[in-house]
Image 1 (cartoon, rainbow, N blue to C red):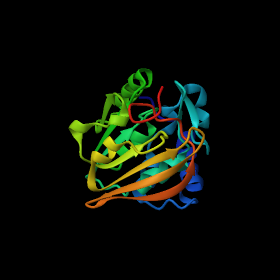
Image 2 (cartoon, rainbow, N blue to C red):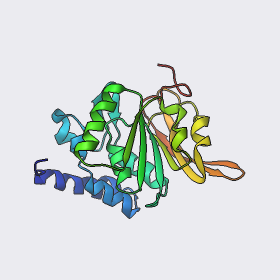
Image 3 (cartoon, one colour):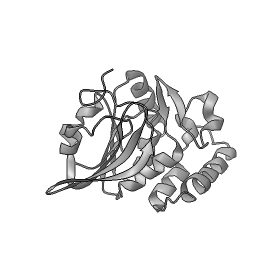
Image 4 (cartoon, rainbow, N blue to C red):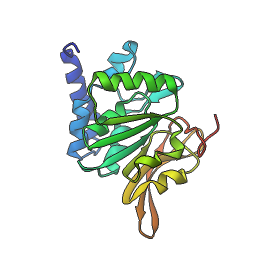
Length: 218
């Protein structure tokens, strides 16, 4: 891979300083990951100069790469540790999985769109993200064979948190997901306990819809 233009390193630093740290993100592992991952490689060539801006961008197939701050907030909320195994629902561009891969030991990520799945798998290989395991499947049913997971991140909005995902979460683990209607959702952080679950509302958001057996219909 050819050497990265210096402007991207500068833009990444500005993104983290202004959009991440200035808005209250304090987890050093999250900050360092977002300083490291080349976000411009996870968008189309036509959008590379917009990759570090403060808004989501289209990635094709009706999907988007989320605003940097939202990615940082969701990641920080899971309180991740180096030994953790994380399940991501909705691989999309692959940027969120790449951020996670710099923080935890193993990332399992599921994508239901074959075009995005194939494109992102190739990108992970080219960037040598060997601790990211991909699957082409319905994310709403999770990945039972590899469960339980220390944390689960859902990067699309649904009417409710799919029960299979809660079932596949380790006791003491956390799950973050946008929950609500088609036009807007609330970012919910679920923690699984021995007695059930507890939920904390992190605030309003807007994501593409979570499609699958336990989500919206296509």
